[in-house]
Image 1 (cartoon, rainbow, N blue to C red):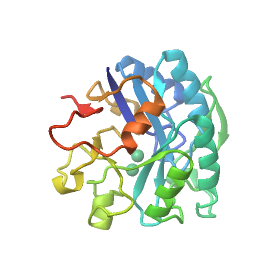
Image 2 (image 1 turned 180 degrees about the vertical axis):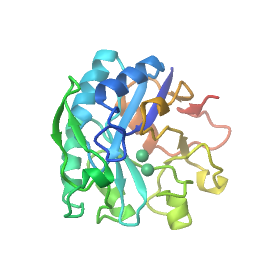
Image 3 (image 1 turned 90 degrees about the vertical axis):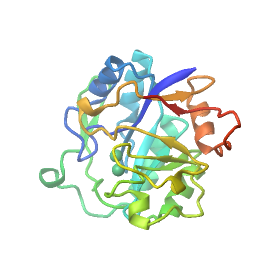
Length: 247
Ligand SMILES: [Zn+2]
Ligand SMILES: [Zn+2]
C-alpha cells in the first residue's frame, strides 16, 4: 500500500515553530491535506507528542514519534522512535545534554507545551535552540539505544545540513536513510545505497506537505516504517520494499 507522509514537522514547542502549530492545528491540516502518516519532530524535545498522538488517533493518522536533535557539530539529526513513551524518555535524556542557559522567548520564540485540547499547559524553559553536547555519532548511537532510527535531516541544506557542515557522508554510522531538501540539488554520491525521505520541515501550518511523498509499506505501522528506514537499500534491479517519491 502507498501511504502519503510528511515526516518532519515542527510544533509550537520549537522556538522557531509558529504559535499556530498546535497539535490540533497540525493534525487538522494533515487531515485536510490527505496525509496518512506524519512525524512531529521538535528541536531537542518530544514534549508535545502525547497531545499530537491523541489527536492523530482521533483523525486516524499514523504518528511516528520523532525529534530533531542538534549535534555538537550543529548538524540536525532526526530520530524516529517506536512509541511516544520511549520518545519521552529519550527527550528526558537529551535535556541533560542541552546548554544550561534558559530560553529567552522574546529573542528565540515561545516553547509551548500543549494538551490534546490545544491548551497550553507549560512553557518549556530549556534552551531548545541550542546544540547538545553530543557528537553526530554519539547522538545517532543514543537514538539506536532507544530502539529508534537516526536520519540526518536536510543533508544538502546550508543551514545545519550534514553534507554542508561536515563536507561528506561519514563511513560510520551508516545512515541507511537520509532526508534531502528537495528544493536544492544533492550530491548523488551521498545518496547511493540509501533510502531518501522528502519532508516539509514545516514551521508554519501552510507549509505542511501535500500528498507528494509516498511510502510503500505492507502496513501503516510505525514498526514497519522504522524497519524500512534501518534496512539497507536494495541494489538496482532488486525489488524495492518501500518508499518511492511520487510527483
Ligand atoms: Zn533542521
Ligand atoms: Zn526541522
